[in-house]
Amino acid sequence: MKIAVFAGDGIGPEVTAQALRVLDALPIKVSLIEGDVGGVAYKRHGLPLPAETLVAAREADAILFGAVGDFDCDHLERHLRPEQAILGLRSELGLFANLRPAKVFPGMEGHSALKPEIAGAIDLLIVRELNGDVYFGEKGTRTTAQGLREGYDIMSYDEGEVRRIAIAGFEAARKRRGKLCSVDKANVLETSQLWRDVVIETHADYADVELSHMYVDNAAMQLVKSPGQFDVVVTGNLFGDILSDQASMCVGSIGLLASASLGERKTAYGTFGLYEPIHGSAPDIAGKGIANPMATILSLAELLRHSLGEEQQAARIEAAVAAALADGVLGGDLGGTANCSEIGDAVLTRL
Ligand code: ATP
Ligand code: MG
Image (cartoon, rainbow, N blue to C red; front, side):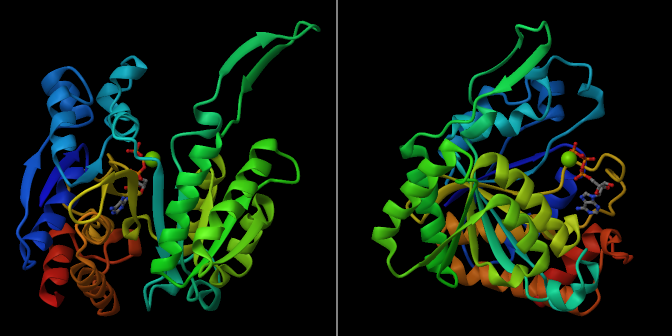
């Protein structure tokens, strides 16, 4: 089993180092290949995603990704900026399904933006499509007949794109509580009507999964009102972008949330994917050793689950993180004083 490790910029290397300590403590044999991404890659190689990094990514069964983002690169042309590393990996590797689990760990209810009793019920997974929608449709600016400036972005999905993300949603639901909610705006959008039709067709192969549909405006409301009703939510790129950030804040700290980006390629043990915390490079606290590495450690758990077929080890890591939190091991993002390596120690002890 081969893992490519791209730690990146800012707090990326600090939090990734703690995740690697956890990996090292597990009874599984993996080989690691490191690669440069982001601002650090630009400084060393003149590109945010150098060719050798992409080669390492393709040779691996999974990628553990830290974060990219560097103020020193703000003046650069867009294609040289650190953020291009993650966008480039997603498109080059065909990573079209972004999975973001949102779960409130016992005792962490008070950190949610919601009332503790509502927050405590959250245990959902958002499956967001990543390669289509308005982000990739035709876009431009023009002048109207009245001489006004006009901008446009075409929203489009073909049925193949919808089917593969629907399958990712059904598969995820099958491994969880067996409920899938498909979120669209089918009362207004043609794309959404096609989306809904294809999701319903795909359901024929997943009769064991309970399927429901919700308009995105209602979904935004329900996520805050009674988030406990959701198991897996599958949605498009734009709606997913917004709902997944909303779900994050329903849970609480940015330092606790993991993500997985999966494609169609299978490894010998599961599905090839890229795993990263949802937070960025946090330049304001980089180098101080105070970042919370739990989101990256939980991303490692997702990597073991989806790409390496090591569900048991994934669950062990999640239980160790939960136990550390329950014992009051809290990083600065949660109002605590534990630093990055102390949190790593605490998780290792409980593993
Ligand atoms: P980027 O441009 O790389 O996305 P950003 O500043 O937009 O960076 P984040 O890096 O996610 O966004 O940081 C947002 C805030 O959350 C910052 O104040 C940062 O210090 C804090 N933060 C982010 N990740 C962590 C973490 N793992 N532990 C503690 N605080 C964090
Ligand atoms: Mg950010």
